[in-house]
Image (cartoon, rainbow, N blue to C red):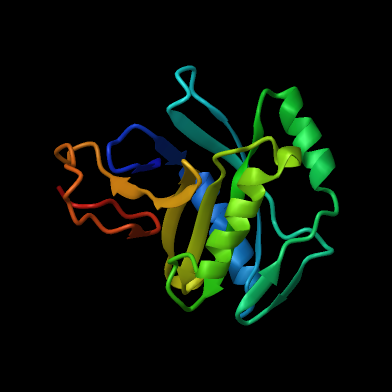
Length: 183
């Protein structure tokens, strides 16, 4: 099943497949009680309004982490990105794990993704930020955000049977992995 996360006006959507969800949970489980993370790779649909995440990296071997912090390294990422470019796929953003905690991005997480958005070398002015929280063995929780107009904006879980959300809806920004929001 593919999970879809949308912006308030539903002008942007991020698609996350079960295989991506399972990869995220596997990396989180391997990290135990430490934070971990990596990069997101994928492509945009022809209209540019949907990002499809097709691959997530694990933590590069030069990454550093502790119970409440993670610094993503770079070892091996350029080769991974170069291979993705050959498939017409690109760096889309970052993901990391808040072990047994809320998946809401911290202020530090938000500041860091904004730095990546402004960095020309990333070639990604609107990066996606996925934060996995909770217990990965129990399925974890997920939040998805994207940088739009220089601000980190939360995205909202969308279910095909759900009515179109109004900007005033109080739809939660996190969803249990593998679940869908009731209409």
